[in-house]
Length: 68
Image (cartoon, rainbow, N blue to C red; front, side):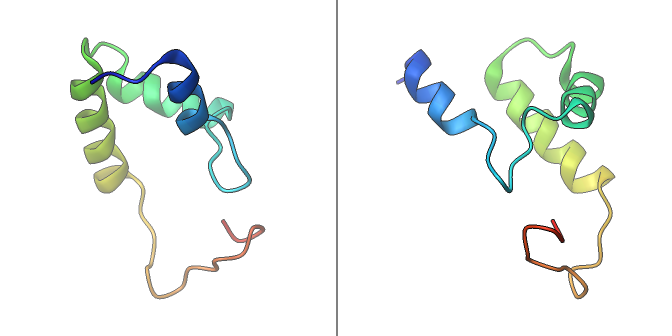
């Protein structure tokens, strides 16, 4: 069952740890999934883009607000 607009907005709203309103995040999403048609295909495409394109060392992550 699809989410209502209100539910969608709740789950996609920016937070202290999720910068969904950042210009860099928007540009990344547009670059990798801008031409994809369905929401499911976009989710899958962005999952792989984030997994494969954003490099980090899992042993040196600072899990504070400032570190993320």
